[in-house]
Image 1 (cartoon, one colour):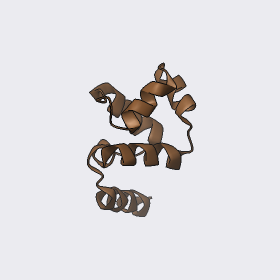
Image 2: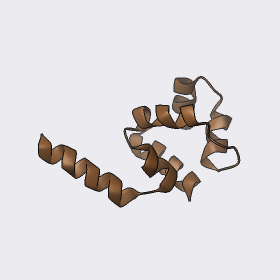
Image 3: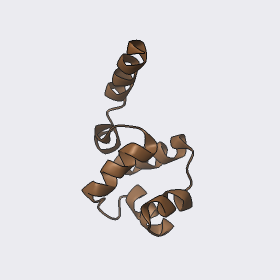
Image 4: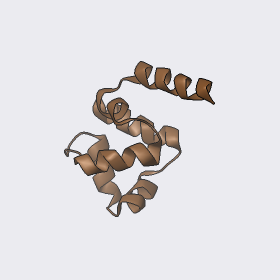
Length: 79
């Protein structure tokens, strides 16, 4: 499930694999490997993904979509 979430997050954020690879200073195949779950994603990569995609790590890793939307609603209602 993780690889689907990671790819969906990238697509929803409007990035191509090449763009994400450039941000991280790696090859686009590395991003593809992460998205297809054929390579373990290092923790620092996750932390940067939070910034780049604008979503919490628990959503990326655990797929907790409902929790993400609930937290987003809290932030928006506080504004």
